[in-house]
Picture 1 (cartoon, helix red, strand yellow):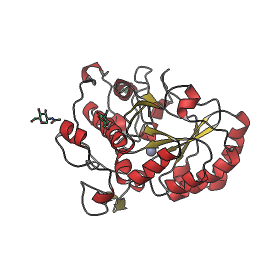
Picture 2 (tube, helix red, strand yellow):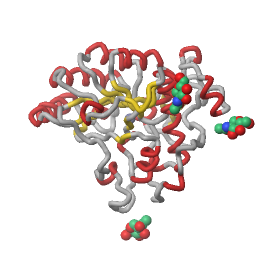
Picture 3 (cartoon, protein in one colour):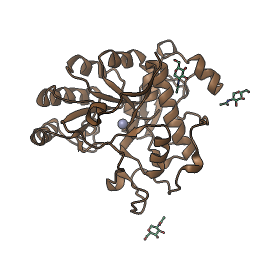
Picture 4 (cartoon, protein in one colour):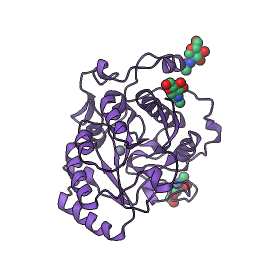
Amino acid sequence: MKKYNIINCALLAGFFLENGECLASKGSTALIGEEDMQTPFPEWLAEFTNLTQWPGLDPPYVPLDYIDLTEVPEFDRYYPGECPNISREQCSFDCYNCVDVDDVTSCFKLSQTFDDGPAPATEALLEKLRHRTTFFVLGINTVNYPDIYEHILERGHLLGSHTWSHEFLPSLSNEEIVAQIEWSIWAMNATGNHFPKYFRPPYGAIDNRVRAIIKQFGLTVVLWDLDTFDWKLITNDQFRTEEQILEDIEVWKEQENGLILEHDGAHRTVDVAIKINELIGNDQLTIAECIGDVDYIERYN
Ligand SMILES: *[C@@H]1O[C@H](CO)[C@@H](O)[C@H](O)[C@H]1NC(C)=O
Ligand SMILES: *[C@@H]1O[C@H](CO)[C@@H](O)[C@H](O)[C@H]1NC(C)=O
Ligand SMILES: *[C@@H]1O[C@H](CO)[C@@H](O)[C@H](O)[C@H]1NC(C)=O
Ligand SMILES: [Zn+2]
């Protein structure tokens, strides 16, 4: 039985935390949203997976011909709050800030990025933004809030993957990692008719085992160099104030470059994101613009 912490639970649409357990709102562990509001489960996916509906928190592994798990290096799994022995070969970002040459960690213009949507809170941010930005979305939220996903797309923003259900990837088996990625891509394709190019790992938790799988999907890993720790606004145990966040922004503005990590899964973090946006202004870039690369690997319409 997997444990979900409060952040994880608060960010997954349709879940709530009770006695330390993350529960689905309707008492069901399978489907979370109102089924008639979900992205329809497409015919091409039904044919490929032999399934008829979107999975719950634990998506099933479906083998793909372009993913070869024998090519994935073997490193010990590790869990939140613990770290593997330091090694350049394993290259853990969350433990040791280790990055690969192909990872995107910054931008030549100071730019905001948003994780964990689409969520009802996202709409207020969309109303305010006057430039293109990047959203790293959860597959499970994408299929439960397809209308919000489409609003993001209509406004010209860039969408990247942030897994299916916000797992700590270094703790999973190779097959479970593949499942987290493939279902997130299928959710994005079924909702937005595209195959993403950019991927951000939940918690920044990534090592070279996870990277090897991400690269086989053709995805580019995106991290950050400036962290607002905005999620601490919505937890009680790790206190951080809005003033502290905005003070950091003033300092970062002086250096003019950088990639800022924020979250659009909660109203509180979106409120602050809007204030940050007012401070920084509209001269910001998407990840694709930061590195001069394509928005999506494929568009299907
Ligand atoms: C789906 O069913 C077909 C026919 O039984 C089978 O060949 C295929 O391997 C199944 N696919 C998956 C992903 O289970
Ligand atoms: C990690 O380091 C500890 C202490 O030095 C050692 O006992 C352990 O065997 C090491 N583990 C690995 C996987 O190298
Ligand atoms: C994406 O969706 C299209 C149908 O719109 C389908 O033909 C294609 O196989 C899908 N690709 C992936 C990678 O899911
Ligand atoms: Zn996240």
